[in-house]
Length: 160
Image (cartoon, rainbow, N blue to C red):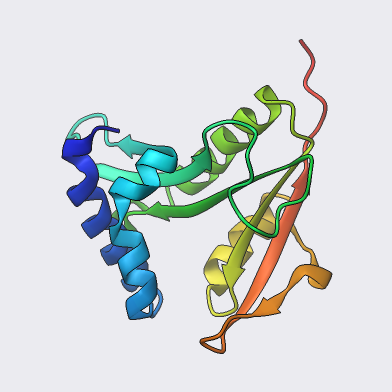
């Protein structure tokens, strides 16, 4: 992604999340801060092949560093997975998660973990469908009162 796309991505991701979930002002600010996110991490964007419209995104760490505080050694994490509501139910989110798992495996990680707020039930169903399971002992409550669930999936060894 390029710096010229930061504003587009921030606005899109806020709209995509708000189309399905309520988000707090502080979370909205973090979503809109694409510049910091792109400086510190790898921000991936998917565009429609015909219209070039931005339809999906996710964030992973640049190297072996920890992206989320709940990730342990040997665990790869991602955040801010989003798909344009008009393009949902076409397999884009599954494709993005598959790409995340490929990146993790290529970097030598054995497990992928993520967090999700309690009310993001449609996302939880997707994660579970793709083989992710809640790690109940890592759940916590945010200062805003929302419960944060951690999901994880062990990766199959890659044959090379």
